[in-house]
Image 1: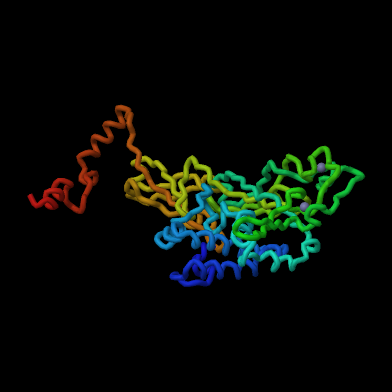
Image 2 (image 1 turned 90 degrees about the vertical axis):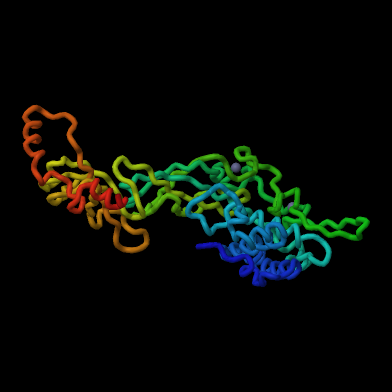
Length: 390
Ligand SMILES: [Zn+2]
Ligand SMILES: [Zn+2]
């Protein structure tokens, strides 16, 4: 998923002025606002997406940076790189709701308050907040990536309070509708200023938006409904993942305060360095030293693979640096069939200590024509002279 163009999101052209941008955003925000689409994740995403586009395009400086450099010019700078290229990291629903309320929630002609609540504040009920998403990194060996692996990871998170079953209410007591906002979670204040009457909508400060109050809070969680804890999460890692790929485990982020929906756990994979292999896409590369005798005569050598050692044939007359391909011995492709190869680079090793009789044998061979490097039939220096034209 890559980020959509901000102009395209708002459905305005690149020369649209500020008021056109504002009105385009207002329409989208009204359509996708979470209060109008409870529990609809795709509406929530559309709301966040439109708000993000609006936040950038309404600011002349940010808009200019975006026009010039695209999304890179206005990155959220979350410091979280990797597989989340298309996400709205650093810009969550809370930010989007605040931005929307800031520009459209207040009094005057821009207010959407009545559109939302139809004037009847008591009937709409408070919003239950969602628990925060959590991110963890899981390190994987190349072998685990090759085969796929089930990982159990312990995650520190806020869990539902046992004492009150997440309700935040002490035993024998119960939640009551907030008297301040009559359960709406928001209050409208009207103040007279020298500019005239100003209407403002704010999160209710008594119930903090939940629409309910607890007179006798649970002692263990102080009414939060959640406490510090941990959970063991099982992650079924498919073969072929790379560093920065991630999986989302539903509901394993923090539990929500006020009995809302738990956040998600985002598990980001990280590849460990390997003693023998370097990874290039789905191919794995390794170097294998062979003796110069094997290089000259050919033979079989043992090489490591991700599934254990295997014998590989070295052809007669193998030069140093030659790459032998072991087809299909690399990493399986993620999300499609087939797999990469293992590429073995041969390093011809020259002995550093020789016994007397070995030296004599080599001395005998030294004068043989077969031992002169050919360099295309000419010596290195001959070729060099030719190249330089001297
Ligand atoms: Zn309230
Ligand atoms: Zn509790």
